[in-house]
Image (tube, rainbow over all chains, first blue to last red; front, side, top):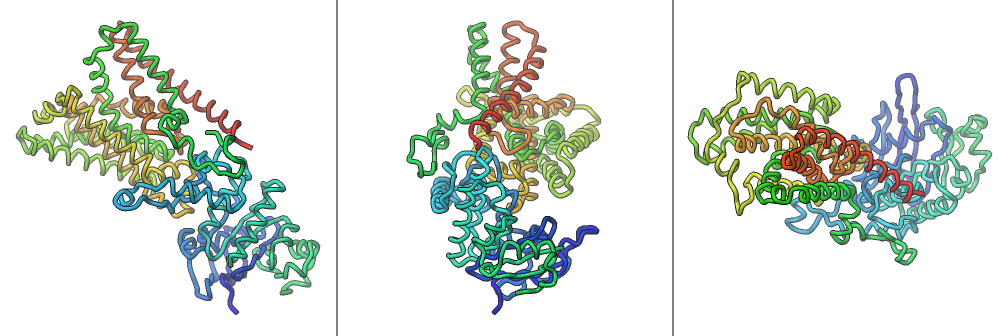
Length: 254
Length: 343
């Protein structure tokens, strides 16, 4: 069975640093795959390479078994692949609704729309509905995102990606800046998105969260996938061991 | 902007965007409108018979018209966190090329004036595209690009004319646009008003305007969502150049000459007005309304000082002080807003 979204032998070098060294990766529809690894293992580089944010030197990316190449993030989006970046990538002066629909504005019907006029009230209503559905802490879609708390900004970024992803959703450290309640919300969101049949890729340092929500765990070390585990059959100790290389002899367990 | 009155789970979908008054209050430019009203009121009290006359008020309007046209483009540019220092020189070179063309064609009719208009805006547009291309594609900082084109454009205007102003604008241009009035309002001000309204609609209501804010607010995020940032930047600088070209023709109509040496401070005056009006030089924030308020402050001071017999040089002093005060107050308000709203 071929995976929904797959990378084979991706390599990328930055000067003297081999950020990705023949890295493999795969995720199926309707599952949560956690991508873990120590700092500098190549997690963010891999996500960038998979989502059109970075070119690779070698290797291929397959979507539904077909080779694809994304020159820009937009091309990945067009296939229903979305990323919640660690830096959230929000425009702080725009409000939540404007951020959510940025680059995909709903236009007014008819001539007005063709002249470039946007349907702001429809965008606000839809944004509010999306936040309600996610149980988000966002209380207003009309205040600038820059004035919101970290958790609220996070939920704007997540809501935006969830709204547009219909195949694969990447979340890069989505809970790093969050409190207990918001983290719980993010975990619930991830499960809900998976239950809708999407492939979810979670990059996280938090092993308990990884084990709580993931179906499979893939471990990166030194730019290479060193292990894949079924989350149900593994433990924090085993994951940390694979990340740090202490369990080298078990490499390749799958 | 209160959410507290609503049930805990309802997400606010309108508020400041609701009534016009509320929206006005939420704008950072509203307090500077207060400053303008105070200045206006003070002169009105000090010299009601001279300051508060239709003649004087139309005079003020006439004086801001050309700068208003340029300020529309400048507002877009500054919201992207860019700057356009070249507007004064582009104005000059557009009016020079346009005047030369009209001179060569001869005649004083509308046909010649129309060709002159076309030439002026095309020349302006080309300079704007050059600015935009260098900023967006060559990645030279806008300050440097437009400082360079400021010099190049002015030099070319001087080469074309040998440094001597061309004083031959068709009479229809001068009579109808330069000095003409429609219902008592200077024609040049009506033209500027149309440009300002179109610019305001474009900035605040259309996707083009939304992307202008997005680029200034977070260029990386704008790129990630698929906005053609480079293309948009070229278009925005092109708009600024186009409007400087239009201003070149209006200036020719108003003064009957190409004002080669007279535009060296136009860029700084317009930038000051836009910034006084609440547009952030760091990008992402600003409004067309604010820029217009920012334009009327220096013009009102100028006229008022002359009337009450204070040396008009004080206007320069006052505008500089207001510029710094405006940015200071804005920073304070913004800091207070993020403290109050955050966490």
